[in-house]
Image (cartoon, rainbow, N blue to C red; front, side, top):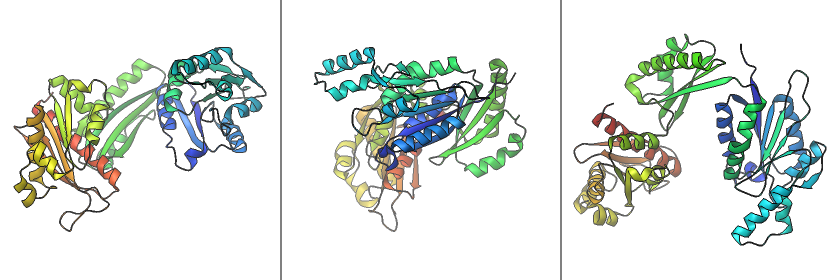
Amino acid sequence: MSVKAVYASILTIGDELLIGQTIDTNSAWMAQELNRIGIWVRRRVAVGDVRRDIWQALDEELRESDIVLLTGGLGPTADDITKPLLADYFGGRLVMDEATRKHVQQIFKQLGRTLLERNLRQAEVPDCCEVLPNKRGTAPGMWFTPAAVAGRGTRVVVSMPGVPFEMRGIMRDSVLPRLKQTFQLPLILHRTLLTAGAGESFIAERLEPWEQTLPPHIKLAYLPNYGMVRLRLTATGSNQHTLQQELDYLFAELQQGVEDILVIAEDLPLEQALGNLLQQQGRTVATAESCTGGYLAHLLTSLPGASAWYLGSVVAYDNAVKTNLLQVQPTTLNTSGAVSEATVQEMLLGVLNHTGASYGIATSGIMGPDGGTAGKPVGTVWVAAGSREKMETRMFRYRFDRVRNIQLAAAHALLLLLRRVQEDHPA
């Protein structure tokens, strides 16, 4: 028996979102978490700190969706208008929640900060909501259950702080478990793999005959990024065992169809895939970075447990650091230049000798917006990756801004080393 789809809208509130001062990461994270439990996000809407706009957005989203999740506007300042608006919208009034008041007082006591009256007002909530504790901050979440609409059944509105750390905690602790209890949700399963070396249109052309044989409840999505393409199979149904078997079979067929360009058959970032492989093999890695300026080190050390396989980095931005710390020969820099195959090869050997790592990555390039020449235009990057025994070198040419070029160089460097380690230690 099929299960009726449940739809959600995500409403983010704050002028800072509309003017680009703050990037909305909340919506993306919430959408992923909702999808994991079988809730489809119908719309994501951002509005400013304007009462009329928030009220109108609530009206519109409640007509379209079973669930409306709000973030933002719950702070202690005058422009935080979400809470009094929700009290009016649902016909209630603000009251002091004693449990939240004690929680706020305890936080300020622990921090040794003066508790102002406006801080204490964070414990006020509409008397028509159910309070969702915020263990990580002062503003609680609020759960509202509006009157059911004919033909639609239960509806839910949840308001949470805009601080990502706090919102995620409330979602995990309270909102997601309760949504699963409140609604009968369809089952949604995903399988994702990563390819490199072929464009999205080329892969689509190759897979078209196979894709046309997929049943209606299983879809294939193409997700290009950093010059690589993720392929995601999504299946919906009600019987987990049957759906899982069917999806596993089709995912195996998909892997066979892209076997020559397959990188990993998991939904993992490159740095995580590399870290997992190094840990399995008992190997280590170190990085020597010029143009990426420590970005590779940041990606790798952002992973829990990275200390088991990541030894460290030398950010050799200046040529003197390349020669003094990484033993790049002055003659190499003089004859080939800092952005060259010879230089990154010597940088790689230098960091391997300096740290004793099994593998390494070295980068040197011109990220822009200036500094390029006719022979080495802006966006030229050399990467070396591998071990003392065998290293790979590649030159890349990027055409984007400085930040994007750095991100692309890091992604391609990680991919180059991942494939080197896979070849050295095949499964």
